[in-house]
Figure (tube, helix red, strand yellow):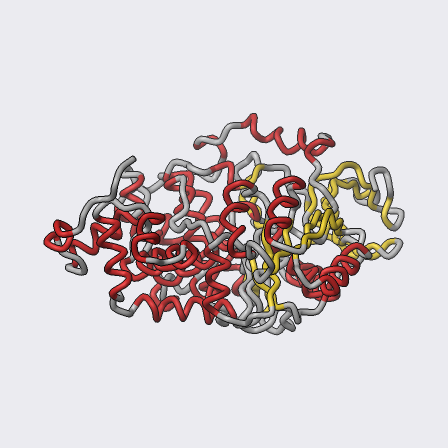
Length: 517
């Protein structure tokens, strides 16, 4: 594509980046004599992806704001659909994590006012995160990537109950697959501001289910516990954006901007880079444009593991017929699946949970530990909430029924490659609501026995052996205990259980400590 001219007007100069469905190039508008960014839709994408591509164009075309990436043109050349947008010379907002409070307020208020403008034009972004925001060398914010933005009257391309967005930044209502309004963007911006202030995310977990639950139920740690120099007023603003109930958040983004600016003394911030932005970083993007080693791969490499040979071959053949995918190997049991995954390091492992020998559930912890970059998409015939939760807790990145048609499977693979959640229609809400219901229950006798042994110094393996509980079930029991007690690790679970009277010191003294050596 480099050197090609689209419709005799837009010359493609350099490769900028690539996602699962489109490639972005630096281009030159020969008619108007200006640099542009050209987003070209990859061939062979499914129709819903094409609809979302033009939905982005529709959303961008309605907006004209200095802090939102501008759309210049759209068209088709040799069956290639493309958008021409403003080329933004700047750095990702991720490079400003962490930042001084004054800079967080300066940049955050710009983002909030841009969102307010979009909301007033009936556009909800739905995917606010640092990667979708750039900062120019002059300190000007630019919100990009309107691929998930939804005009109020637009036809949906995601099913009701489907989780959309990036897990670390989604709102509680997104996590549960509920209807969204402008307040979902306010929550996501609150996550971004929290991360910029403290250098870390308020919610973090090893699996999708736990992260969803934290967004829905767990209060964020107060920012001043992490950075004591944050003012109480600024902390109050951040925590208000992160209220679980959207009617308790700021009801509009301009109110958030005003509240942010009110936390500083008069004249207390500047929107320029002289606050603390390193000018030399402005050249980093240009340097990346011409670096061929920086170009991400086009083809998604897959290992297929299923003991049903006809189904396995049918799905593999379907993927191989599309040049976007490369099936590296197939496996018919858990041992083969683990071996092929560790040897070949695919981008995605399609994994059946019920296979001879080791099951998919058995090998998931090993894959998480030894091949953490491999995305695991579970394919199974069991529509069972507990089964799904076990797979997600063990390290799966998504879940689909085997009855899912091939085009939806391909779309799901693309989504997990983009770090999106794939839980299927309605499943996310059932999982979250089910876990919330579990959290309201009293500890069971088994859970109390497990906690007593934790307090006595037993490992999970020793507890499982002593209580005759399989390790896969022990993992689930410990996760359920931590959910009910609202703690993040087994040590704090034991301490909370002692403090709240679930177990007693008398019981602990009667329990023999584990044998050492």
